[in-house]
Image (cartoon, rainbow, N blue to C red):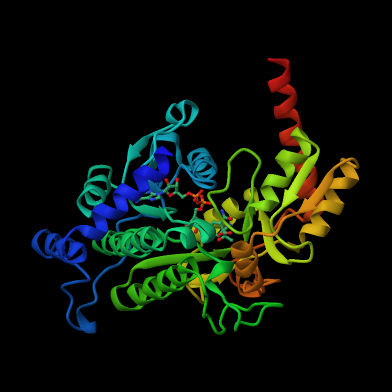
Length: 375
Ligand SMILES: NC(=O)c1ccc[n+]([C@@H]2O[C@H](COP(=O)([O-])OP(=O)(O)OC[C@H]3O[C@@H](n4cnc5c(N)ncnc54)[C@H](O)[C@@H]3O)[C@@H](O)[C@H]2O)c1
Ligand SMILES: C[C@@H](O)[C@H](N)C(=O)O
């Protein structure tokens, strides 16, 4: 598979490069007057996101933008800030419609110099860091997940701090583990995840908050639930079943579920997720009592989702063939998410519950499939 080959090549390059972290450090120290790697005591902390004036439109770079969430976010942000003020980037080749919808640029987050060139040449003020390997693919390739999710994040943090960017990094329900309270899971509690994905996301939360306190980095982070979207495919996670069921229900009337029928996980429709991202990015700093927030919309089991879909498509046949890796991951994740801090601090509110989600997904996929048959 070309994508897998490209990713493996990138990871090998990063992992085999002698002291790849040190090379990055050398570049930062040589060319940048302020770098987190140079600051030796807290009193020197001097990074502020002052370059962004609230009256101007931000100039946004989205990394890993060709996955499930990036294209939709670019569309939303372009509507608000103008097409040319939002740059999508990835290491993959964009489909034609994405390429023609606004600026796209190649960016490998493991290439620090390339990242810096993009930020400088395009006068970037906000960075949305979406590149990652998700939970199931991460377990299948731990070395690659470690490189992309941890080494890549270090590059992003340094670039953001050096250039005074506002930085958004999503975290996940996967940042919690079996020893966390699971029903509900609050913002602050034990976090001992058992996947490389979860470990890398806890690391991202802590590093982002550390850079915020140490260097004044304007770091903002939301822990997303499993995200459900109709016009983009998930990238290899544990919650992917909740997207696949809609496609299979419409196209074949049959669905094989890889999680047990009673596995409860927090979920959210993509429009709520992207709006939350915009809202936290625009929130005045003084409203944020924390830098990492849970957000939630609904919570359901495969069985409950099937029942809701069968209200519209009663002939849907569902079988269960459990994937032990995904099941073990799901069993260690939150069942319900407590997002009261987000609701109190910056008025977070979801629009979609399970019935609206199911109706919207079936409408979208149904009309797409009718269109395909007619053409
Ligand atoms: N989709 C969800 O349900 C969900 C839930 C919680 C958190 N998140 C987080 O949101 C973000 C976006 O999720 P998504 O579902 O769009 O992910 P995805 O897996 O669909 O897309 C990730 C993208 O990262 C890119 N990428 C991989 N290696 C890269 C590299 N070296 N340089 C640049 N890009 C690289 C891939 O090509 C891919 O397009 C991720 O950080 C993820 O952890 C997603
Ligand atoms: C929940 C989330 O982080 C992603 N969809 C996964 O399952 O890995």
